[in-house]
Length: 227
Image: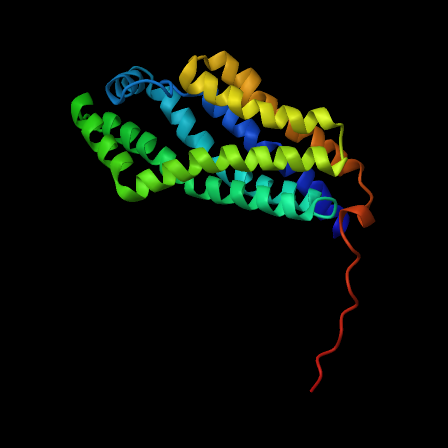
């Protein structure tokens, strides 16, 4: 089973950031827009918001599993950094469901015939709810910190060339800049989450090249239960 788990981990590791890359590409609005402008953009592109919501539905499990798989792959070389990075990233992704809640609400309301003003009011209420605020803040800060920690872990581990970890680290400031400071979908897709996907994919290839013994210790013999 060690080989099976290693191959499955290698497959899973890049799928999370790849899903986010496509999500950032198809989302009809952009992160720096006001709620009014965002809802208007969604109303003009219901196909885009539907694609975003479906990508989130299928992508989030791989984001969670990939965070754990990457931490597992690095744990024997840099156990503390791998544990901290994967734990923070996993928690951030788990709470990130609150980020997508308003997208689902907006699509559902607009398809049901509600006007844009009402949709803005309800989606704002969802995002401003205390659990929504905590979830969004934890996701934003947590996935940035988690990916930086994992990038440092990749560098320290020696599993791949140091620049792969540096790429993962630098990609997140690029994501922030392209999302808020200098809004640019292309920059985020290529230099933000696209670069993160590339870094994760290179680590995944290294996992595929690992021996089973390097990946994990052999299983212990089964012992019969004592009466």
